[in-house]
Length: 483
Image (cartoon, rainbow, N blue to C red; front, side, top):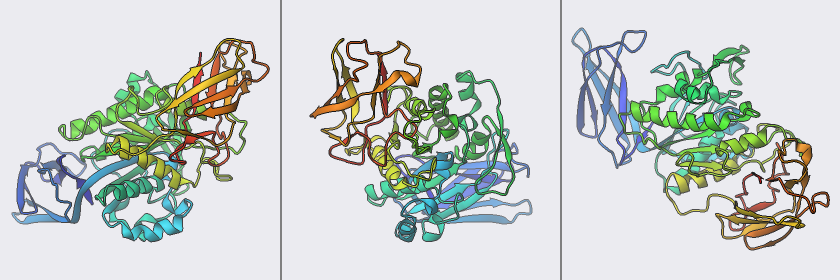
């Protein structure tokens, strides 16, 4: 396995008899603690916990934990081959659960997995709980060294493609630093299932919607799940573990829900708070949190649907991250990674992993790498003009790949109906500024809104209009502005 490296301390904990002396030995150091008196599981066992001194050496180490049994004999458990590096938790719905075995270039990725023995993998089982539990209710993949067998596990079972690719890419960029990847995700689940109750309360969600969900990798039975049940069973058990950060790929099940921006922000806030509290302040109260902005679904480029607004809400209604609403959040844009006929599960996960790892290296690790596409800085329009000028920032230059994807609204102040938006094509590009030409129906009228890539599946594969000139795999995120 991997435990969190210095400068953070790491915590090792487990179950045993109540009120007993517990001894931990690692790297010629001895730690002792007394297990708690109150029982913490159905066996009546109590929790013991040891906080290690910060470990800079990556290892490997063996950890030996001993406790005396009621009959006086000494019981010892040993964990072998423990590395110290950075631990990342990967969660969400089916596009995070989507395994390496199902992505493009899977054969090559799986064959090469044995070259990354310092990456260690773990996958939780799909199990809900009505109340928070200390111990996982099930494990699909116990802590394992990366190998063709563990990375290339059964479809939907292990290992998450986005989790693996993100971990592999930051591992390589960080000169082979050990990386621990904990995958805990469930296809078809809304965000409410992953939120602690306080987060739901802050967003005025007092319902307790009950859904029956069919696991992709389980038997043909549906499991009833409701609000907070997956936080309780598939996140809370990890919150005694010191982690470096988390990545998230979810939102399809909340498309069309106007409360997502609040819920996403509050989920991040309370995950961080819970980890910080349960590690006695060791886990960063603002640990890095990355996400994949919603990709595509239908192969109909005319369909708008609920995805565009959900993508906007994923950025807390700002349009890009990082921003000032929630600190240390980063993302990968994915709306140009269409994969016909694979619908809601694009197999183009290598691009997702690349974009997310670049963002993670910049925001989570402070590296000076290019990590985002062009961001709209200013929109200039004079009443009666036939053109609009858009100025971009965050890049040194922009690549104009095609002139399409922009729309304006000049028919009504609310712009609420998609029929009120008409195309506006790119006329020219000079440096970081593009000029749009207005449709004849809008010339001389007041403009009420401008939007970009506002479709569920807005363009062919990697054929959005605006990309970074210096990194052609970094597109400009979707955008909307109502004047």
